[in-house]
Amino acid sequence: MNERTTDPTQIDFKAKFDLSGKVIIITGGCGLIGRAFAEACAQYGANIVLADIEAADPAGKAKELEARHKRPMLGMTVDVAKKDSVNTLKEKTLEKFGRIDGLINGHQNKTNNFFQKFEEYGEDNWDAVVETNLKGTFLTCQVIGSYMAEQGRGSIINIPSTYSVVAPNQNLYKGTSLGCPAAYSASKGGVEALSQYLATYWAARGVRVNQITPHGVWNNHEEQFEKNFANFSPLQRMSYNHEVAGAAVYLLSDASSYVTGHNMLVEGGWTAW
Ligand SMILES: NC(=O)c1ccc[n+]([C@@H]2O[C@H](COP(=O)([O-])OP(=O)(O)OC[C@H]3O[C@@H](n4cnc5c(N)ncnc54)[C@H](O)[C@@H]3O)[C@@H](O)[C@H]2O)c1
Image 1 (cartoon, rainbow, N blue to C red):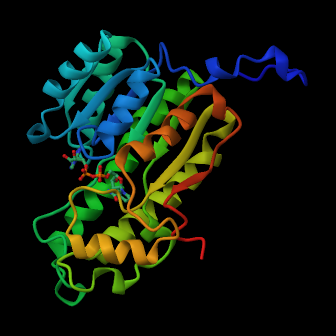
Image 2: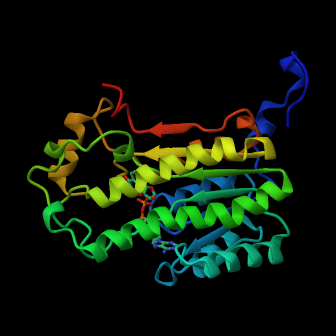
Image 3: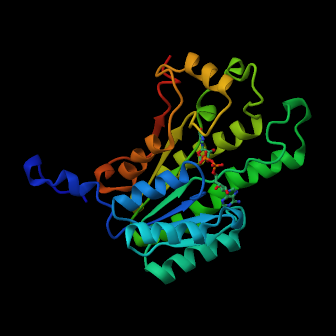
């Protein structure tokens, strides 16, 4: 959508945000932020494909979404780190909807030993985090992004982290059981680099590749953590999953037709000072 005009009165700006008729795959779509992406995009008219592991019940969640919005949705059990599984995701989506317009990579692997100390971090633990977070994003971009490039249109949103932009302030975790493992930062740093690469690699083929960086999304966190967080945050509080979702609607819609290679920080100004 690139109307050749300098007259903004000819533009229906509201319609530009409309996602009706668009098919959007959301990996990790049953997670904290993934389900906010799904609900927001569904409210803007999209058909959603929830792609998540079996334990998250993507099929059941998709049925709920379908009933709420009275529009076909799809739930798929997927392991993003397995190419066969991602191929099946693409094929089943095309079988049901005949098109794919958007992809949000909202998956992450919080392993059992996720918060292990750096000095003791097990190789298996490191591999599991990097495999899901980074290789999983590579595979979905390769399989689904290549389809988009063939079609000459599509929008991809990858999710890195504040901790691929800056280092974690270790004081944030004082008095809590939480932390941020290096494997997470490193995997997300890779997601950021991959996204920038693909933004220019596919720009001429009509595929836009952007990123959303959420931060401190509240999920019944320990009280001490919430207090610490407020002290370090310019907006002095944690965020809510629904506050991240508007960025996805924008980046998937025609309203952002000239935006690619962008990392939209939804982090309350965390990296601004
Ligand atoms: N929550 C935050 O504050 C925050 C901050 C910055 C970045 N992020 C990033 O945003 C994204 C969403 O975060 P969240 O808080 O919703 O996480 P979450 O843990 O609630 O959701 C992640 C989802 O990914 C799914 N998943 C795990 N392994 C998978 C696999 N192999 N294949 C497919 N799906 C798989 C999980 O089942 C889960 O539903 C993640 O990439 C996360 O790193 C989150």
